Each structure stands twice: as C-alpha cells, then as structure tokens.
Length: 148
Ligand SMILES: [Zn+2]
Image (cartoon, rainbow, N blue to C red; front, top):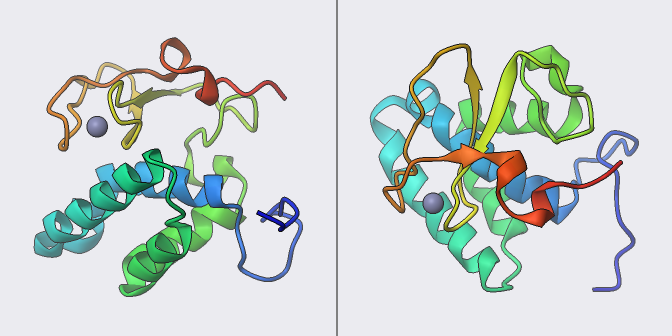
C-alpha cells in the first residue's frame, strides 16, 4: 500500500478510495432491484462475494468498480455516490460527514456487507447474505464510527 489516500470529492479523475468503494458496494445492494430488475440478484451475489473477500483483507475495490461499471444504471448510481454530496440523494453517506438526519444508517452486524438507510417507520430489513436483521450503524463495529 504505497498510494496516498485520495479524496474523491477533490480529485477530477474517477479514482475513489478503496473504503469508499466498499461502502458504495454495501449501499447499492438495497437499490439493485430498483436499478437492475431481474439482474439484481446475480449482481447482489457478486457484490456479496467481493465484500466477503474484502473482509478477509483482499483488495477488491477495482473488481467492484468493474462490476458496477458494466451496467449504466449501477454506473451512474456509483458515480453519484462517490462524487456528490450525500444530500443530493437524500441520504446520509458516512457518519459525521454530511449527515442529513431523516434517514438512519443500518448495517449487517455479521459481515458488514450491507448498508441501508431507513426512513421513518420502514420495517427493518434483513441482510440477504447472512439472513439477520440489520442493526443501527452507531451500535455496530467501531470502524463505522469514524470521528471527523
Ligand atoms: Zn451480511
């Protein structure tokens, strides 16, 4: 790891930090059905597989980018997630960075492989990979509680 950290919001080229790519992958999973219809399940499985590899220390951000670039819908969603202020999509991207308040971040407590933003009284979702109810991000692992 010799690369300096890259802030995607200040660099003109599309070269996001690996952690932002992983967070994008977790966050796009609840949207796949809307974006891809019948293709969603296949892509979701691939993302779940790549996120599981990331949890074992493998570098998969390039493969996630390649996967999400294959389809126009996921490409644009990803590009927007990685380059625009989160308020533009009405959700909170990272704790402490541009929090918007009306959506609460939930994550998978087992694999940290699924990120979902809950609004109002929506029923709490289940991680499709681990089949467990998501938990509020601020009550899960420390790595999600970055201080800024
Ligand atoms: Zn999970």
